[in-house]
Image (cartoon, rainbow, N blue to C red; front, side, top):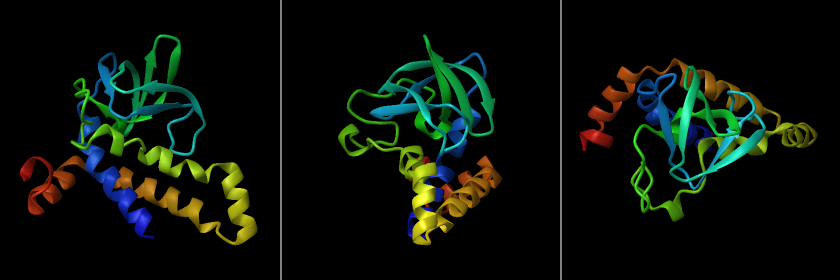
Length: 160
């Protein structure tokens, strides 16, 4: 449950980021490695990978998911893994050193792929998949003004 709350919190902090992106615009990867997924969901298969600071063209936006392209590579990326401006070569957009930030929320959820779900079913851990689906539904319900109010109240982010 603690991991789910942490994951939900990281999703909530990323919500304002997706509001700035536009179809036909650009976005930059802000992780050491960013997966381009086959579908707009955390458990989808990766069909390509992009390195840090890659400029991507935005082809479509579905909620907090963006379908992007970089030459022949196309796929879906969670908006929280992208930046509107090119990030610094020494720090990610979240201010942490790149060496300490190689994992995204999507990569953290990847172990819940079908093989892991089957393992979980055999071991009585099937709740994990339901928890991720619930978490994604909760994240979809969070509005940017709610995130701003939370950040301001708790003196986080730009309100420090």
